[in-house]
Every structure is written in C-alpha cells, then in structure tokens.
Length: 425
Ligand code: GTR
Image (cartoon, rainbow, N blue to C red; front, side):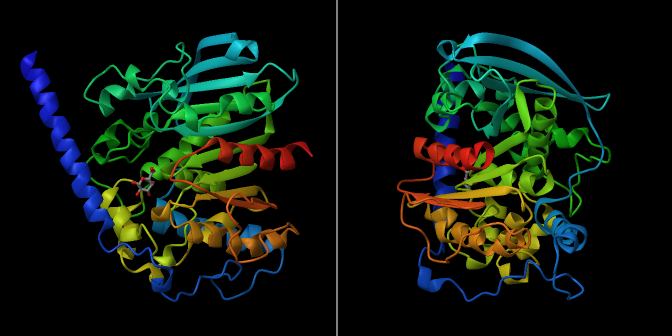
C-alpha cells in the first residue's frame, strides 16, 4: 500500500518534470511576432492539377474536390479506409426527466468489432423534450469522459480510463469540463447534443494505437505504419461519422441539421470529418490551430515540426517530410475549409491563444472564399480581422473572443446563433 502511494508520487513527479520539459522545448524558437511571418504563396483552391481553373460547381465536385481530398489524405491526415467495421448499439440508460425534466438523456454503448476484437465507446445524448418534433443536433467529442461534461451523477464513464490513467476510477473528473458544454443553453434553444470521449476511438497516446479502432481494420500491423496510413486525427474524424450513423436511427433527430463542433485537437479532427462526410451541415472549429484552421505557411505559434514531435501519433508519417518545409506542402488549410463548401463552416479563435495562431485561423476562413463563391454563397469579405466579440455570420463564420484556449459560454452562444441562422431561418 505505502509503496504504491510512494510509486504514484514518484510517477506524478516524473510526469510534472516531463510536462515542464515538453513545454520548454515547445516554446523554443516559437514565433509570436507578426513581422517575422515569412512571405508565402498559398496553393490555389480552384486550380486543378492539370493547370485548369475550376469554372463550375460540377468541375469543383468532380475534379478539384477529389484532388484536394487525396492530397490531405496522402500528405497530412492519412487515408480513411473504405472497409466497414461492424457496430452494434446498446441503450444503457434512458431518462425522459433529465435536466430537471426539460430533456431526455440517453447513454448508448457502441461496440465496434472485426469478428476477432472489439472496442467499446459510450455516447451521451441530451435531447430537448420541447419541441416535440424533430430537432437539430450538435455532435462533439469531449476530452475527459462523458461524466466530465456534467455534474449529472447518472452519467457513466468508459473503461478507456483504465488505459489512460493509473487508476481505474476516474470519477474525480466528474463535472470538471462542464463549463465547456453549455447543455442548458443548447437544450433551451431546442438543440440536441451528442458527445463521446475521444479516447474511446483512439486513446490519445502513441503507445495505445493497439487499443484504437485503427487496430480493427484489415491490414493493421501493430509493428509498422505505412507512410499514408491514418492515425489518431483520421480515426477521430471517422468516429464522428459513426456517431452520425447512430443519429440516423433516432426518430427525434433531424438528420438534415447536424452540426459538429470540435475544440483544439478535436477542431482539427472536426474539419477533416467535415471535409469527408457531407452529412455534417455545419462544421465548427474552436481554437483548432496547427493542423486545424491555421495556415501552415505562416509558421506562427505551433508549427509542423513541433506538432509532429509532440504528437507523433496524430498525423500520417508522410506529414513529417514537411517539418520546417511548410512551403513545399502541396496544400494549406484554407483548402481544407473549402472542402466543406457548400455546407456552412465556422472558425473561432481566442485572443490569447497565440499558440493556435488566431490570425492564421481567420485567414484560412477568409481564403476559403472562392469555393463558397462558386455556389453563390456569402463569404468573409475583408482580410482585416474583426474586433473581439464581433462575430461574422455569413455562410462562412468567424469570431475571436477575449481570453485563452478554451470553449466558453460565449463560443456556444455564437455557435447557436450561427446554427439558428442556417437551420431555423
Ligand atoms: C496542444 C497542441 C495543440 C492543440 C492542443 C489541444 O498541446 O499543441 O495543437 O491541439 O494541445 O488539443 O488542447
């Protein structure tokens, strides 16, 4: 017992030292000075590989769009396999009187299986009891378990925490992330919410790849990774599409009105999910930074080299060849946002979140314009960033708020306004 506590203290100490060293390493050579952003030329959204310029929606959809998807898959996120994995759903709990009677909660166990091996994931949903007809829905991953998003004591946490933590009892996380999930507001405004812990799909450590859904697919090799093989971000994007598959079985959900919201590393996965799966009608990136909305070529804050070093299991192996060679990457992130057109996209930044490069996030939303204009949609008109708390709500949306890297009540208010504008008017 005493030795156990001693070991835990020592491990905790080592963890702090490691975190500190990683932070110091990461902060070295970081550029936070706008005047030091290198001159760059962005690859053109509407220029096909054969040099032709896209002139019509048809040409965009048949020729250029698939070219871009292929470039992001082979150079950045890795390929999403075509193979289908069996999944079963088990309703674990259903409470029609949740949230003081204004919502119905559901907890559903997903079991993914390839016949030999199984992986389980837990979905938590709150669905407003009013209106009684179909409602739009927000989908989004949480970081610390469904039980961390609310103080509701009936919310379960998944077995993945036995892998992620030293302890198998993760209850101390209950409610700790509730400020990031404005459930009351979401329900009051007539939206359902569906969330899952991202660790259920790919536990966020390189050594846990064998416990991720990636390991269920044909050709998976625990000892080797192909250069264009998908990794964690690809898997998380895939998982959010599996949540949509389930929502399609739910009578109360309006599947023509599905929004996805992802914060930070999940903002990256969200944009990639939105690019690939057209069932996401609104795609929201919250502080997604490098590998998300921020333009790589600006090299402001986090860069390709730093992210590949700190998170070797997020992007495909091919992506490493662009460490400190941003200008040779055949794409940039404005093209990822363009892939979401004509569906609506919203990018959000936080003023103090320089690591994520707020200006780079804004500019890729701005430069995604040509794809949206092909459809006659409205875009961000000026390359001047808006002031704090002055959201832009065209078919492409953007805001920057005061404060740090986080998801706040203000962010949710903007997302609900954006969703009202596009889903309800
Ligand atoms: C940071 C990482 C960012 C962002 C963030 C997060 O450490 O450098 O790219 O993804 O984590 O997800 O919270």
